[in-house]
Picture 1 (cartoon, one colour):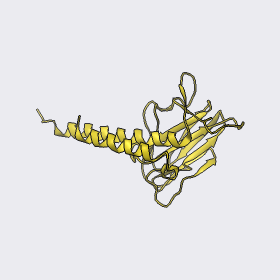
Picture 2 (spheres, helix red, strand yellow):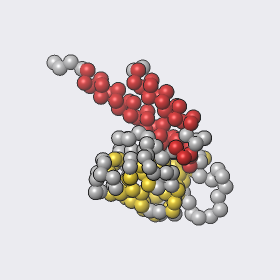
Picture 3 (spheres, helix red, strand yellow):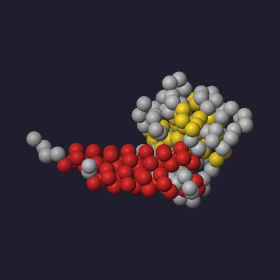
Picture 4 (cartoon, one colour):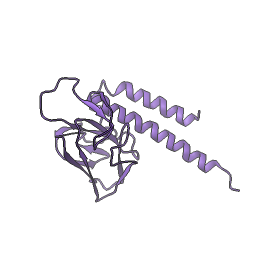
Amino acid sequence: MNRVVRVGILLAMTLLWSVPGAPARAGGGCHGVSLTDVATTTVRTQAACFVPTVARVSPGDAVTFVSGDGVEHNVTGVPAPFNALQKEQALRSGTDLAFRFREAGVYPYVCTLHPMMAGAIVVADGGPAGRDAAVLASNAEGGGGTLTPWQPAAALAAAIVAAAVLAAVTHAAARRRRAQPLS
């Protein structure tokens, strides 16, 4: 196994073990922006963060991701892409993306260009919920997604881990392409 991939996996495992115990770190590589958890249908990029870190919406709501910091980002669902995101979707400066969340659950996402930049959409019907009521859903549009009990902090940790592993694998693949001799 390539050294870069091994180091990436080791880093990801370290993050997985450290983040759930410290949810304030879950927002990633943010500078000057703290973890936020609010009811809103708009998520902005600010200082390499998704703000709010956790957005709470009702089933059927559309969430708009707005570029707000002049840096290119993308929005990629974790562990499987949002239904509308078969692959990462670019979020360039001055643009926005919208996704509709029909099913209750926790939908973690990352920016694969900035692996520590993560957030989650929590879709709930407003009824009473216990501590373990959140679910990690693999499909934002519903229909066919699998649901597994997760807590929002664990969902953010999974998003960060997945982004770190993806970054390590992408870097390793790019190095292999550069290292191939020209014929």
